[in-house]
Length: 169
Image 1: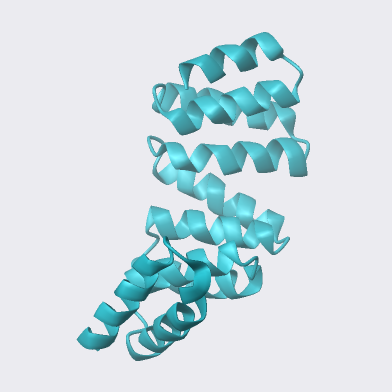
Image 2 (image 1 turned 30 degrees about the horizontal axis):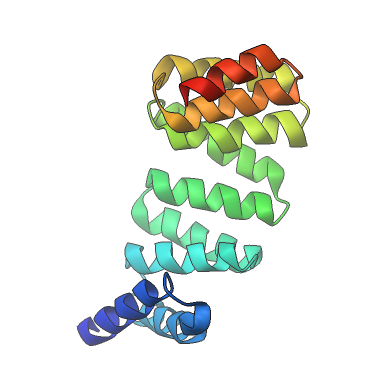
């Protein structure tokens, strides 16, 4: 397994240079996932590749396994929420994001997809604004939170506020 792990890591690193390595990388990561189904790095990498390929069903399925094995790792929860949203399972994605933001309120990466889902998909603008407020309260200097606030205010056509948050980002 160690040799396969090193090989898969090398292939994965090569993806940053050329997408020509994609097929080999996926095969190696799938085999590694089959042999070591609890390996979080493998699940993270494979989920990310599936998301990039818009293979949301595969990403969501693997994301559920990753969340289960990682005992609700925040990175795994966020990946699963994004995959679920991509797979049009928006209610489920929303529950995951709210849970993640409540568990880890200082984690700035939780806020942008949560605010976007509430604002654009569910049209729950006041609730989205409340999550913007919470994000700014819990992670006021975070780029992700400032950008989520800027996008929220831009969508609400409040351009002065959008500009202020964009400048802070």
